[in-house]
Image (cartoon, rainbow, N blue to C red):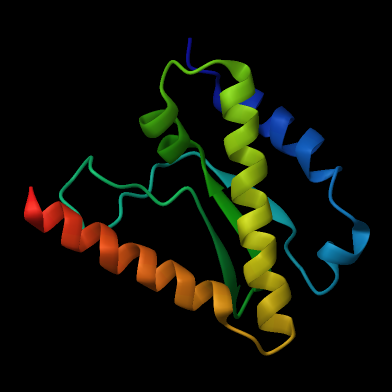
Length: 125
């Protein structure tokens, strides 16, 4: 059974509490959960989804997770798989936040390389 948006929100709240308070410094908007899916526009529909993103805009700095993306990719996986992916996504986005506040961009570079390789592999199919 695919968990509800509300259930994922509860899990996200629990998981977020496992991260040190220092990670939340300068994260004005905290961690938010959007109901929609966010397909990656560089891939055909349904092939790749953005699970979360670190945002720094006029509203401040915050992390967004996309429930619909989790539902599309994890589908009927069990609770443990969902929680593992939520944790991994939050940790990934916190890394973007910490690097940006420190003026670094190593994870951005790694993400771009991953997408480049994924696009190349998709093109070979």
